[in-house]
Length: 529
Image (cartoon, rainbow, N blue to C red; front, side):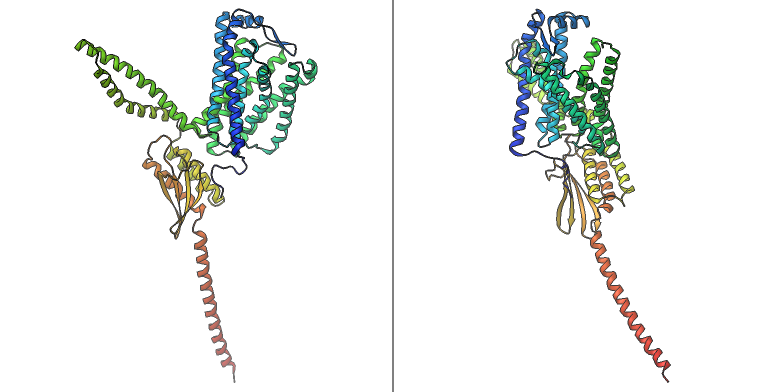
């Protein structure tokens, strides 16, 4: 059987290649952030004093004093207010994209699709840096590097959305049109990039540029269809929860593209507010990925975020209580004794330390309540138990075991789990999740025949809470339901029954033969004269 958590069709990176890829991606992300942040003072100075040098790309002005003024007027803002507004929107988008990418880089390990996700998010975040970099004069090579990222990230983004969340392409017939569309988009982007820097004639991509919107709409349509198809036919319950909000984000972006295409065909110019909103809608992608990571353990970083949501506000609360406690204690001591005292600091520290644990527990409950799977674990496992019983005669035993372990881990929020087969005194590992560390907090028996049975083991919960009696009952019910499908002990029992049956059959045959012989002799005697 295949070990749970390792996709037999997936690929994993290991060794030096993984470390090099990780280092390069981190260096590129940090370099882009450093360049953008370092350019902000010069950007504000030039934009506020209207000393921007006009910059053109393929005959189109992409940065000028007039553009800044027109953008501020279109939004009914002063020049200074517009600069703050525009920079704030860019900072929000860059922070979301780079923040989620950083979390995935931290925990993606050897998952190639995790690294593709981080790469796409960094590339999309970089597109929000171009306006600032266009205004200032960055070091040689920086502007082309940022722009080539902005040009080429779109085909890669479409591929990433199409493969999300497992990296598998389905249905199979969509692979050919997706490949053709991505190749077309890649060619359009390369031609457009080269023409923007004057390395190709400006009109080089003219006839092909009209295909850009068609390719984009076609690709988004295939993405929506394939995600809905996989949701209905091939996703597990965990994967369905992971892609639910992601598909919602894709549908919203698809509607946005349709509106922009219709506006272009009608020759109308979208309003400034619509342009701002449509630009910021891209953050739905990293937010949906972050939601899947946080709530449905897509890249196993939910525990990190859970602890962050607990300890960051806890630190702020404790610091505030400490400051207020010391101030109040010192005020009280000054009122009583006329001078400050170190006893006030000790007393305040003692009170704050005694309050920190209840506060932390309360925050933990609030975070768990907000981000825990909405379905009750007992109800969820009970539902799956009924499904197992319905199809128990036609399913593959290995798939039942893997699915049962997946459901238990997801429903109970466990730190991994494993399935063991017990033959006499021997305990054999059959399946395990990637997070399994052989430290069981909940174990239930899987019935078998004779000395052949099984054990379903679960690690502690991510939240640190203990398992309840209801949790144990739900897992026990599931274990009893999957026992017939696993069939442990059936082969030995069948062989034993077969051996006994053969022995009984042989004995019966011999008895009949002896009886037949005696009857034959009797008949012969009767016929003799």
